[in-house]
Image 1 (cartoon, rainbow, N blue to C red):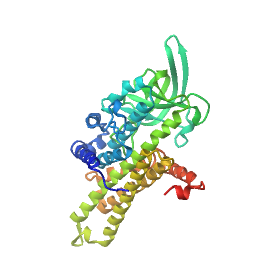
Image 2: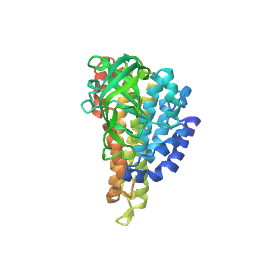
Image 3: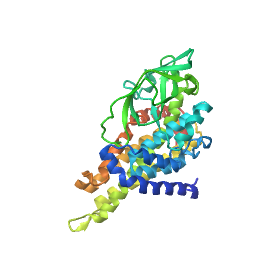
Image 4: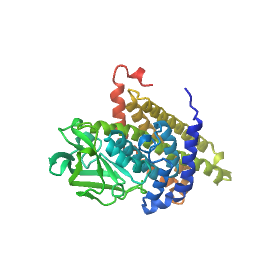
Length: 390
């Protein structure tokens, strides 16, 4: 058991830190204020391989492990959690398309997606199907006629990151009976006739990426755009989300790390009652707790990533544990850092309020933290769980 990063891992980490410091951090507050989607900067991150971190090398990806990928995502998130989070979603959707798509489909989309020249959205959530994702109503009806073998998609999706600004939609739709077994997955070109995008949502945070609803009205998709077999879509979606939960947990760790750095610096700079804040034991203890909990969250995320890389039987449980723990701790560290800053932390001149707003949604998406507890509790009630989950 070795907790030290290898030279190669340190190199990935440093490359991401340098890119984030140079290309993301100086602009993050402006992107947030203007609700600007920095597609050009995301494309530049793709030149470094950051848009296809764990996609296969055959399709232009770096083929990294999930553990190695967390090192990159954390550095990007420390500069801008919102932009980093979109890059993680794009990575998840890109992996799903290249991993489960037909070879011709993967060859068509993979190189452009992994390079960041084209971007992907993940489309699972619907207006009436959030935590109960298996109840989704969007349908994909197979039609074979003179124009070929197609699926016709009808329905709607909600809260889709990047919608209206991406090039392909990795979409789950119902091809069979009710429940998870009736769901299939598809890669749908985002400009297909019959697709309509809703207004850009006005959000508390995550403002550097657009969020919209999507309506599908008779959208025809070639049968070759199906990912996997019919009925495998929900399983594919959940496999994507195992990694997605690690990714979003990592974004919380990155946001919290940035907040911790800002709080530590401010405690040395700010003086009250004739002394620096760093002299007050109450704030020393607060900083100590923030650091301790953040280290614990980071190690939990890396453990879950290593379990996923190893194909561990309980990898999904560890991913749920990591997502719940890291997103709760990440938000609380940001909140405590804001408290240390006092009124200044509430101003947009400082990064704390942005980090706090961006981190809050991590407790909701990729499966709410309540659903994460359901996943863990269901496993822990099995007879072997107390010894198996350690």
